[in-house]
Length: 376
Image 1 (tube, rainbow, N blue to C red):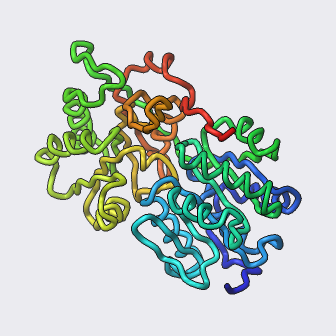
Image 2 (cartoon, rainbow, N blue to C red):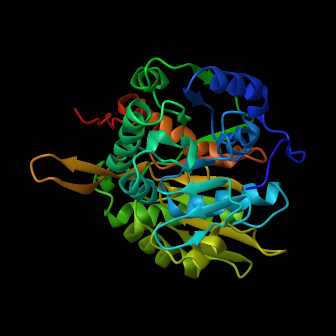
Image 3 (tube, helix red, strand yellow):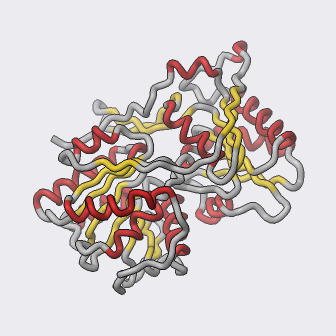
């Protein structure tokens, strides 16, 4: 691995305000919790800043991303910031794709890859720090990965650094989990986003938790088609799953003009199709992306000014009686709704249409109700 005593000049970002505090904290203590809103730069800057840390001792910085498409896109983005290709200083490893080399110092990995690393050698001898990004998304695998890293830190690697990063999680709770470590908060930079509420008429009888109701996806297609006619910019629409994306796509595609391209974005798509959804629209064209919650955080889709949010998400639920994890469709939290609307204000003033009545927000949970799972 080549030394990294300095980095090339990086574009400014809101997280720059806490750079010195982050570096000082990790020199003095082994754990840190970092809270920063989407777009602050925590996913792309922190791993690069840590390359010059004296405690790294030529070991790798591991960045855990819950989703494969985000891991690939983020690694490529960081590599581009260094003027390189993915697989040089910054690489990534997922279940079905790998871009790493002997010179790779920052490795973006998915949950399954980190679990495999810990199973093969719980000391993580080649890692100086593990960054848990977007920890609010929560999964049994990510919680287990953090638990195993804490155990490795306690038994084998007192020099191992652990950083948990999120935009919406209760960071005080996470700090307690990490032994009362420091919590740093960074502000973000975003443009104003206008909120419009476009609920279905009451006669449609949409029941929260039943995302398959065809009336909702007809309504979503109507709202998207209207925005394409009356507003400018690219559009991102959130659906809970692949079935709902396909229903909306079928209803919407015949209603779009020739200069509007329609993409879907979810974890089971081939890598080429995921990359096409993220890439800028061709000159003279606009794009619509129908996505699952994969597009809520970390992943930046170029030119998004419009967001349509159905208000539903699909989350894994662990059933201790059966020992199985199953997906359930439910209302998003207020924090999740804020994250989704914020995608419209990343690069310019935007507009978010929420497909529910504003009064319903009084009954929505403030944050995701996923609980910490830790082995006893």
